[in-house]
Length: 239
Image 1 (tube, rainbow, N blue to C red):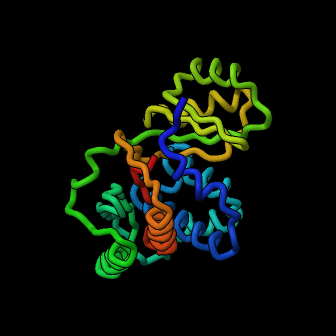
Image 2: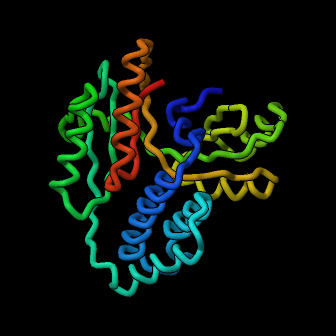
């Protein structure tokens, strides 16, 4: 079975430097801040917060840091007012790109995102220009420690997974978005080690890049967008 994009696994295979870790902590911290302000600081009733705490822990964010962010957000200490903005556009050869941001300065973020697109052969589009080909799905990554492919298929079908892709060191599973946490818990009970789980936007149509220069330019565009603290997630329709 085929997963949504081998490009989506690039960030999981890269070694995380201290700078990368700091940026990840910043991004997750912003998500937690917004989540707490919107739905409260109790993870038992705020399921999104529960998932973000799990995401933070899977990225080795210390418990005290998580607690501090939640306390600042719920106590009104953090005065930053973040808003969610989604930018849509095209990379080289018309690759569709969606960029999800959380920012306290809309003008700064728009300028930074536009600069990245312009510098690496892309261009920003209008709202809705590419989002119609993307759909929200659950993505679960489980550890592949010499797993048997036949058993994987049987277990995943039992759990009503939509699709999966087997890599050397992990297995990527696609689910209906609303079933993400339920399936994640079922897989854990069966005995799978969950490396990460989150909602992602997956494209219904794919494009491929074959030219080396195009591939390098696209990688640079994605990397530069990722380096912005305001950018939370990047989705493309690259195959």
